[in-house]
Length: 496
Length: 98
Image 1 (cartoon, helix red, strand yellow):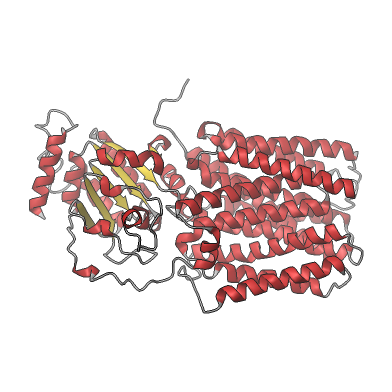
Image 2 (spheres, each protein chain N blue to C red):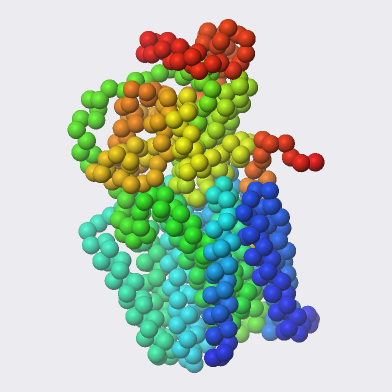
């Protein structure tokens, strides 16, 4: 068989593919054009792979065909996972991408040694070190997200010293190999250390920091692919790797800004570790709780409701119940919007995807900067499974570990409702003063079943309190006036 | 080699700048599909693996290359598939233009 084509023809395939990749990312700027972006990426990928198969160096297609079929068989189920499983799927795909780069890098080294030009050896080492640490680091992240591994950070004394020393050793080995590329016995050692480093890097990182870590691993995966492009002198790979690397980097910056923390702090700070909550008798402070019936009555009487979803919503699989609540309230003329914190959930954009899956229109999903100005005019802020991103201590308490972190100003809404299992502190173990405000009602229970009860009340439940219009304005219109809302709150206040 | 290396560095520099400018404009709404899309695009590393397998230089390179093609292909297929699924879920409440 000879499909061999002129090298220039192949390069033109690659050129077009590179342009399509850039267009694909450009079209991701808005949901209206994003699907076109995916098409562009797919066409680019087909062109690039097609062009590669024409390479005159290829003497046999048997193994390639088998590997492509097997890869497709593995890839399809990974493309069909539930939306709640997207963070771990993403981490796993970073691992696969890095695995590909690492394996090619290792094989490449043994094909080229002992005569490896210095620059090639340097980028080859970079490729293998970055690839290997991204591979094991991403597997660890996926394990934590899938809850195979404990989500709590595992720390020990001297952890940072050990990690940094390991990385330093790997770099020293790489430097030695650049000078003496025939020292092949050092190569597996270098790769092995990078593999171990990847594990140790992610062990101390808690679940709440996953959005930043996934973004950072995404960036590393891209950079290792770009390094592979340097080794193989493939401009297409350099471009794709640079695009992926910068994408991951930008997302990491956005995520760490949204947590008011630096990269080094996330990688070496073990943020999520259990803190001895030295709050003076948190349990002693009174909280006000309400039943589903009371919550439904207040929601029904509101004009504007802002729902604040968090990771807890994903855990409870409550996004479809949130949608039912959205429907029930919208039908009554209540304006419902969603406040999305950049780090809500376990990866960038996690909440948007979950809510979109539940068929909530995306123009109802409002970013933090835009929604914060709206909270003072909001009748009810309903917090579903979010905690730290609503903690006013981030604004007011310089002693708080999250002081300075941008938060959703939920406490400025007229009434705050928080669906929560119990009063136990959130993931980061930080007490949330929001819960003790006079305007806050705690709705204790599982998010899914509590929302179900509220929806039940709103759509004519057993007691029929809400449906009968006890709090509605004389049954004239589903939209009630602000005064009625205040009245409803007063009545509920008595109930409590 | 020397000029190739410099060319490659220029390409990397320009692509990184384009990446920054293009990705800065991506709506935060789509950050999850963005990540799965860049992941699929990054799997272009499969081209290097394909050549390594096809050249059949050593058994070692064939085995490692084949594993690499499997890993990268699963990212290509899974990445595009899930990005497409996610984007189809994003609907607006505003009436779409006819």
